[in-house]
Amino acid sequence: MTIHSIFMTQLLNMNAHLGRRVAAHHFKVVIRGGRKGIAILDSDKTLIYLRNAFHFIGSPIRQKGLS
Image 1 (cartoon, rainbow, N blue to C red):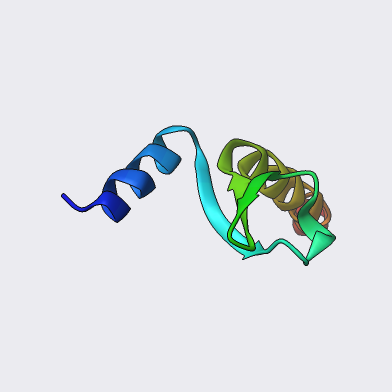
Image 2 (cartoon, rainbow, N blue to C red; image 1 turned 180 degrees about the vertical axis):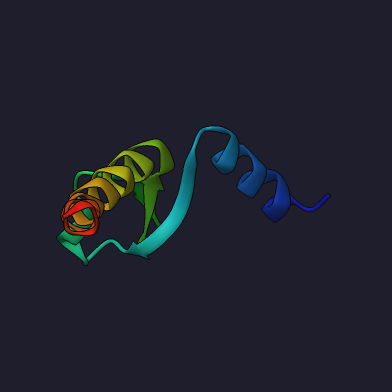
């Protein structure tokens, strides 16, 4: 195992993954930190926001299907 793969395993174990450049401030809510100009995103928070988005989009679709 290389140092890089160990580091990536540790990041994934703490529910973080590499994301966009830190200069992109669109994801402040889910950014856990930064390293070498790359944002580290919290995958737990990302999952919560994705589920909320799916429910927001899916609700009107389901309602129209029931009419």
